[in-house]
Length: 277
Image (cartoon, rainbow, N blue to C red; front, side):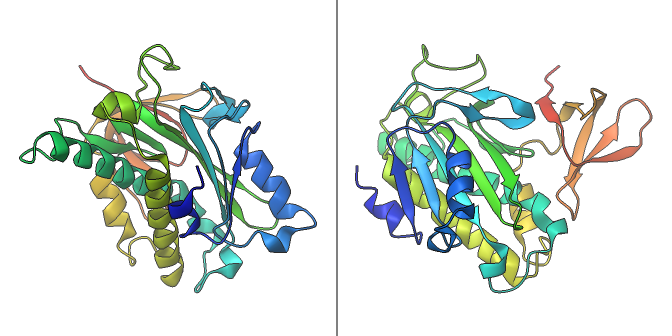
């Protein structure tokens, strides 16, 4: 595949036949002697990642050719406007929103082809705060953002394309193939995601990292299936919070009303489980 559509929307895209971690590959390239050749929006992608990472140090493994590992370089200094470091907490949310809209598009096109009257195919595609994309409760994509020493950011995402039921890493995973019954066009999916993500970041920077003023906070909230849910959050350090997810605050934190004391608590990081009683 030549990735023609995806290459058209970014300044540089390198496809690797195999990579340990695309985030690691991009970090080395962006900080190496050819750093100037890796401008804002540069991408490394592979369909065979053998040492991927997820949040909380988890490993991320998948059969060759059935997933996409995508890493995008964000250089705030190259953007019109500013992105204060305090605004970086929104970046994985913007990536999650971009991927959620991309996956919804795939689902809707597949459903419309089967039944023009039903654009959803009976599937619900949402963002789970802060960085997972779910299809009817099953994870199709995870996102991991990493800060670089020069103030740049790498946004990595792992998207399940054509995993079948025997390939799934967990019982709560799915793929675009399983969700839609159709072989996805990997280049079209990648191009849509990259265009949405980089467009959102440009808009974010144009408003100096103000998610509310840019309208991006409302966009993310509208896609976030965590809001209104009873949740269990495993907090850094091992503590646990049970409560109802009420909103996302100006800093991108999830505000949860504690079931034990009734007080709202803003959570900046944690492993979220949607509870169903």
